[in-house]
Length: 317
Ligand code: GLN
Image 1 (cartoon, helix red, strand yellow):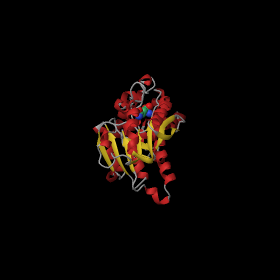
Image 2 (cartoon, rainbow, N blue to C red; image 1 turned 45 degrees about the vertical axis):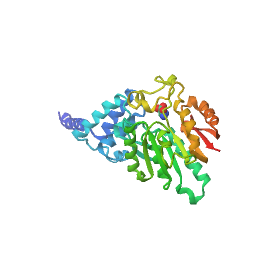
Image 3 (cartoon, rainbow, N blue to C red; image 1 turned 30 degrees about the vertical axis):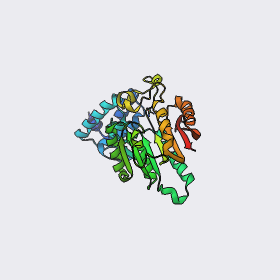
Image 4 (tube, rainbow, N blue to C red; image 1 turned 135 degrees about the vertical axis):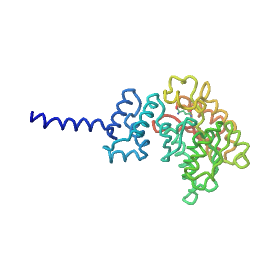
């Protein structure tokens, strides 16, 4: 009896504690739930959702892992977990994606920025720095066109890193442009970028400054490029069920938009300037031939962070 008296309160105490939904317990529960469903990076996803609901940085979660969640926070998490289990990308759930070290607002109106696309930004910045001494590094006088801008991530990342450069950025989707404008404002570059609605280069060609022969230093584009033979079986459910198909499908061979860009694009670029287009890995060689055929010189294929052929780069002679 004595030992029981001694024992019981401890059990009660322990079970009460284990029923409290602390940060630690919620993270474990979410991580296990996501892992059981086969979702990618379950623990990271759990941390991102938790940090989003608590309104703090992800790493801060670990400074107070025994913090009990309020009923409202638990309800918000339950809702997000249910959506995640339907393969909704975590970036849409938290409304944010990181690209080139910068946070971008994202929602289902735009494609989520991919790390693969960062290699395009890097190429532009490297080329610019190699050609200009320290004096020219702010990008004064540099004009960029970003075609199919989506969230605006490429244009904004470039303008952030070239603080005197200017850009025009186009998209067929006016809804996407609303997101892109918001991201430009968020990063303080709105004054240096014009967002134009329209099909591929059409609005650039109609633009007084950017649409002239040789006006551009850089023409960059991450157009829709998934070929029909890779759709839908090579595309994840998170992409297929939630991201805008308009931003993804590139026609029978995935090069519909690439061909059109290479038709009209190079003439807009000044000698020594670059055309950079992201393409499907399976179509990189074909795209490189198209670029050479379009009169671009020094055509190369740049790999992405996974080592996959990803971006075609050509220089205007
Ligand atoms: N890389 C993207 C994907 O496979 C495709 C992006 C695009 O078509 N521009 O999800």
